[in-house]
Amino acid sequence: MAIKKFFQRLFNWELWNFYVLYAPIAPVWLWYCLRSRSLWFFTPSNPTITFGGFEGEGKKEMYDQLPQSLVPRTIYILNTLSFTQVLEKIKAAGFTYPFIVKPDVGMKGILFRKIDSEEQLAKYHERIPVEYIVQDLIELPVEVSVFYYRYPWEQKGTVSGFIHKELLHVTGDGHSTLQELVTNHSRARFRMEEMQHRHGHRFDRVIPKGEVFYLSYAGNHNRGAQFTNLHNEINARMHEVFDALSHHTTFYYGRYDIKTGSIEELKDGKNFQIIEFNGCGAEPNHIYDCGMSIWKAYGTILQHWKALYKISRYNNDHGTPYWSYKKGKNFLKEARRHFKVLEQYD
Image (cartoon, rainbow, N blue to C red; front, side, top):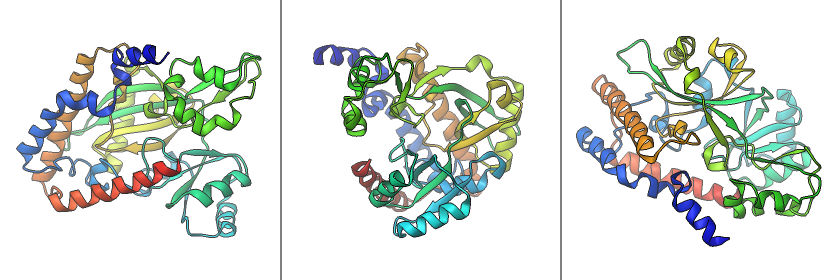
């Protein structure tokens, strides 16, 4: 079994380690650094987001800039508050169970949880070492990602990627245990250590026939979500929606994670909520789960890097400075220390 998994990983580039996947094209990134004479050439890309949204930015600054009608109700909780104070804040804001909690500064779905009860919230608050968000659980049925970029000297931008997300889950058959369902799942079996950590106490449970058991509520590739490429659905109406958002926020480059009632409603700019905006550190995740060759995937990534470089260079030429080497180094060091701490509690 171990040998089979090894060869499955070897011949499926989507399962490769991040650094292994990106190593062959890393010289292109270095070339943009040299051309800009800045290791942090990307920092002017989104001028109103810390570090351009590459890594380590807080979600609050993103939510504050988006139209409030398009983001879930959100409050911020200091981990140093007493649990009584937490409950008072949540009650005052009008939240009811279930809702979502996640770190204000987070990534890759780390410590993203759905909270169903006061007991679960108490355990989360007791453990989490940083400030976190309490946010409405958006029940809209369709979850998508939209990658968008706009050159600052142009009025209209490009929706370059559009995918549907299906959260990592198993469906019960009435006789298999959760562990057996995970072991036989095409994606979850490669995440057995994570599944054991999260759901090991339920592994002996037999999932009733037809019942859907979500293994993760984080809709990203890092957490095993399944993507379906919707590139053929991109049209002029969708471009208008995201052009308007870009002009409202001055977000020039990144990926929107969205829940909506339907694809058609999103195209019309109706009935959707923006769960996250990921800035210049966002991966064009439409390269995954669509049968794309690694060479085409590299071409897509390089296309986006070129756009990122041009946006950043223009903004720098028009008054948004590159971060200094020292400032960027210290910020990145602190961000990675922060994420390392989060991973210990995930």
